[in-house]
Each structure stands twice: as C-alpha cells, then as structure tokens.
Image (cartoon, rainbow, N blue to C red; front, top):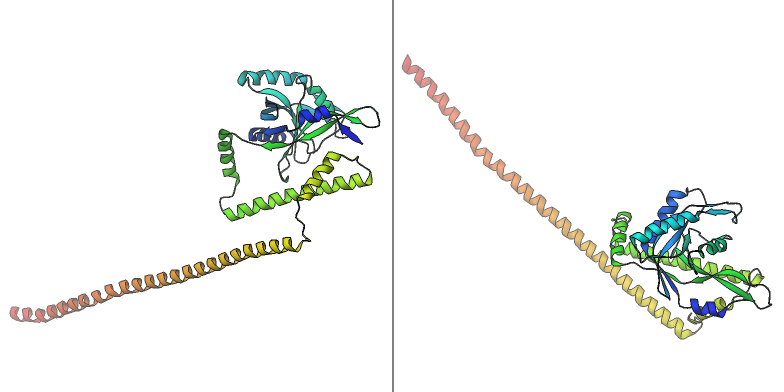
Length: 334
C-alpha cells in the first residue's frame, strides 16, 4: 500500500489552480507554431502569476525551447538561460507576476516530468505543473494541475516522488471576458440558434462525463487485476459519488422519475403543437395577403385599359371630320 505524507496532504488540501484564458490561448499558439499536426511532440513553458495560499492564480505564460527524444523520454533538453532572461523581461513589464510553475501540452504525464519539475525547483521551491490539452477533440476542462510529493510505503522501503492531482478551474477577469467574446464571435456560426447551442453544450458535457467514467472504469480494472496499487482516497471519493446516486429499485423513486419525465414530455408536446398551429396560421395569413395583393394588381391594370378606349374613339371622329371637310374646300376652288 502507498500513502502520501500527511503534512503534504494538509498543505495541498483545498488548493485550487485558477487558469486564465490568456494562458490557454498562449499555450495553443505555442503548440501550433512549434509542432506539426502529424507529430506527437509536446511543448513546454513557464507559468506566471500569484500564489495566494490556497489559490494559485495563473495569469500569464511564455514558451521555452524544449527538445525531447520520442523514443527515450528521459533524453531531453531545456534552455535554463532562456528561462532566466525571459523572466527578467516579464518582471519589468509586470512586477506582480511571479514564476509559479511550468506547463506542457501533454496530454498525459510522462516519465521525464519529475526531472523537469526538479529543474524548476532552482527558481521556485514548489512549482505547480499544469497539463494543457491542446487537442481539438478534447472534451471538458483542458487543464490538469499537479504538485510533486513524496510517497512513503508501509513496508519501509525507500520513498519515491510522484505527482498529486489538485483541482483546477478556468476563470477570467472582465477585460479577458470581452476579448474572449470577440474571438468566439468570429468562431461561432451565426446561423445556429440558441436551442441548438444549448443542445451542443449539453452533448459536450455528456461526452466529458462519459470519458471520466471510462477513466474510472479503467482504473478500477487495473486495481482489480493488481496492475496498480490501491489508493484509499480515490476509493473513498468513488464511494461518496456512488452514495449520491438514487436507488432505482425503490418503486417510489421510480414513480417520481416517471412522473417528472412525463411532465417534461407533456410540455414538449404542447410546445410542438402550438408551434405547428402558429406556423399554419402564418401560412394561411400569407396566402390571404398574396391573394389580396393579386386582386389589387388586377384592378389597377384594368383601369388604364378603360381610359384608353374613349381616346381612340375621339381620334377616329377627328379623322372623319377632316376627310369630310377636304372635298368641300376643293369644290370652292373650282
């Protein structure tokens, strides 16, 4: 059995890493400029912000030169001088932003992460590592935050270092929200309706829930087969989540779920019926309006025709009179 030291757990308990949208955009841009689409390489960078005790505010970041052997993950290169020089320049721009950790594009933990984390301890005593998933098909929050801790085994063997997951969230200030809205305005399709947007968002959340359940199933299967050790904290959290599920074998609970579902479907049925009636009413009104417009156009075309006939008759009478007068004039000349 493996257990994390109590002191480290107490220090990290309640700690939340808040990532701003500017960091997500910077990491995505860094990955798009540095790595081709067909490659599986990752990018590494430095995180800047404030450490407020229980809240780690990640407000800015910058990328650093990093090379890694794809076959051997323990072979890697990172430029120390570049980190120091860039941090000095960022400090001149905003002195409040301190170096609080580092990031990489993951999407999962790798064997060399502990060594890279130890390297960052030269600059800060306890760096936070944030994995930013830049894959376009990723579902859910694209960030995972970790702290390096030491594990103590009950059998008295040598301790080893590992990463402890801490909660992460994405928050934005008012100015950042305005910028993100302008970006989303260009990305979103203006032809989509509010209903379709809500349905797509719910579908994305359900897909994220499905992926989390698949990870839990995979972890429990590996624990049952003995491939992974038992972590009692994870088991306690899973038990709490299972206890929150309703008992579907209880007839009262089943009846209440059925009644609630029928009420919702009744509202959907009535709304569809009303929408159909309104559409038919609009169609009838449109046809009636088109019929009235056609009748008015027909009447307006008939009036000019009636007015043209008397003019033709008057011109014919004048011509007849002129023909009658011509012979009389000729006779007088004779």
